[in-house]
Image 1 (cartoon, rainbow, N blue to C red):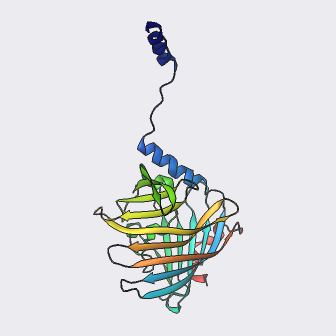
Image 2: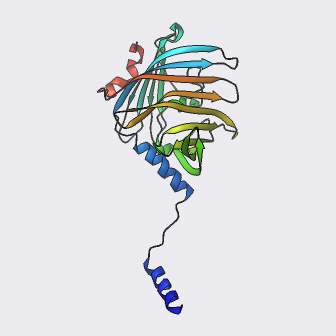
Length: 260
């Protein structure tokens, strides 16, 4: 027995000490894997139908074109152009997302015939009357948040990780969000958003995922339900194309007036 104890003590001095992964490290590792799986698509174009519903179920529909440009070492660029109905036709919205600096966003409103910059203090405001805020439209960048692994659970047949993220940028309308990410493909399936009073504000659900270029998954249906006002917004995506040769010149602020 004595020889066994001596051998065990000697091994303790030789073998490296294995540090347990913290919930912060695990949360960051999961979101990093999700982000890494969606790198390299370069640029994309798609059509989108936005359906707004009030608390009584009345709907209004908007037809939209969206372009995105992947930017190495920074956040992505996005251009959103409204084609229908007539009262919003020609409205164009441009976003330069950033990892650490405040995002830059501009909107051209045909009725005003001018380009308006969205203040960084107004990121929590509704985007074009929808249940999506301006900050929801920006690309997801890892340094914008802190991460915490909460648990694992089944969601609609998917085995998922559940993470808590907290914005590290100023003027967010959220104190935190809870993300459900499936273990198989690391796709976001659901997000719960909590307001500045830490009450559940909205839930975004992702469905109808399709794979492009044998690697990149895109949800073709996204629904944002507002639990506090009873309204909802659904985005239906179609006609995705990738690697179209888009460049920075396709995302210039001064061209917003000419997006028809």
